[in-house]
Length: 447
Image 1 (cartoon, rainbow, N blue to C red):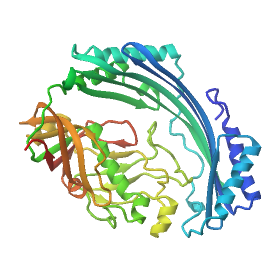
Image 2: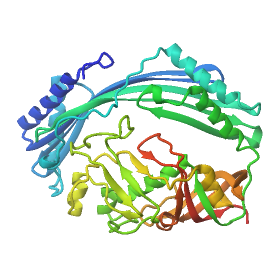
Image 3: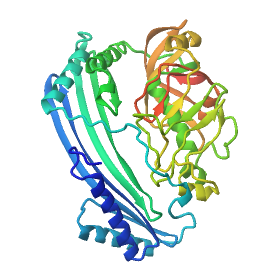
Image 4: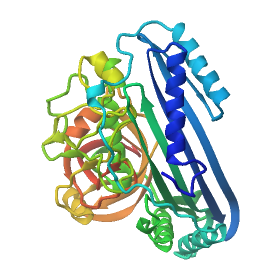
């Protein structure tokens, strides 16, 4: 794409990728693939009304993977000169010569590669002046700090804009790529004093800056979320229903993706081994994958190997319908790639038709989790134990804030115990979902 935003035209990147493949062939590679990319952006942070950081970034790179039979080598460079490209290809070839044969190694099957191009509306450059970004950040932070007099400190408000473009090519003849943008606004503030201080944040991210939440709204939400956590206390240890608020509920989908990804499966390090076609969630759970979502933050017509992506139902009525595989992991498993080299594409957990307030009422008495801490998730066994904070709910109404607790269970049991999914969708990345109610978990607090 010829665009004044970038230093290189699309045609220039295509020529560089083609040149890398030619050099690989000249050096003795039997197959090769190349990724040529460029990115740039700017970020401004304001803290306590003053400019704290102004950052500009601009980078470019070429990655080349070569195959000599079923031996593989990889190298990369940020230098686009012909001499540097040749040296990089030679380095990759030398690595390949000294590696062992791997029967699963190689390019994706040619018949599976995407044909043509598809505009998914991912590129919307936004080039405000630094002064303009500072003004937006100040509006955001002022709104956060103005929520309540008890907000006495701030971690700042940040406004960011980033644009990138890439071309992927391989020796099967695939040559394609696209430009994309990502913009964001965020704020984090601190309420209270001394040991009673509480911090929270809010942010918005989008392909088009016009799709961002208003900066004042982002700031206000950050401020409100911080203040509402004041005077938090622990709860009695016990078994309670747990409602994961939408911002943290997306992590549950992340654990599913980790468990059904090819690397975990062929290494036998997943709690969902051999789960394809079996019931892994309650029958209320439906998860769809849509690579073609316009302006989607994880949209693409092809994966990192050039394989065509496709819409599919990943979980239907709780039954797992598919894995997340690239070509290598698929071959290791004796299966076909699912077009997920590089990850999932816009997963949506379908709601069960209830609002957040309705989920609180449905839960009755239990724990609302608004933040998770720590990494206590074992993807081999499914054991789950994480620090948490949030709110105690009584008779369907938020009663008081909670801190210094741990929630625990096993993901197999948690998935099967999903009672409802809210329609309070958040769209901040590749996983879209509302709040998730789980029937029972162990909450460790006071004895």
